[in-house]
Image 1 (cartoon, rainbow, N blue to C red):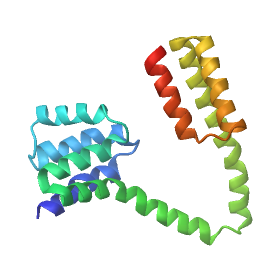
Image 2 (cartoon, rainbow, N blue to C red):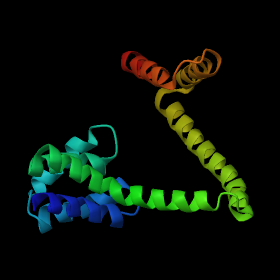
Image 3 (cartoon, rainbow, N blue to C red):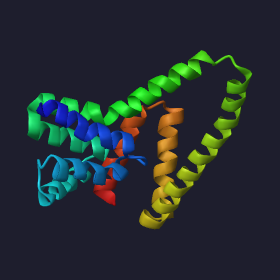
Length: 175
């Protein structure tokens, strides 16, 4: 019975948590603290603080940890799956639908209209990152990291993961 409860405790916030992980936190807290009584508010806030200190989506980290505490390894797997299941089901449904109509002129037109929007959104995001970086570490450091990263990835074909790791090491020693 605990596995069914773990599933519902994280599936419901996954469905209702429009806006991603941060929007799901109050819903998860309601399920874990109020509905099932697995934790106190203080314990949940400590788990949340620990989860925020680790990389990755917060909802899946909470689901994995709380699921493990309540039901062991199987509980962690069920909790994590329940968190991603709504998105997974929706993506499979929409992917199937899109694949079914991929040759439709309307879908092709939609794709043509969406591509520039995505490019603009990525451009705006890149500009924000560079602006914040220039304010935080200065223009010269930002330009140095940007130019070296560009050359490593584009000219010398170094894998981006190694470039990111190198930037982290550089930042750890020099910034």
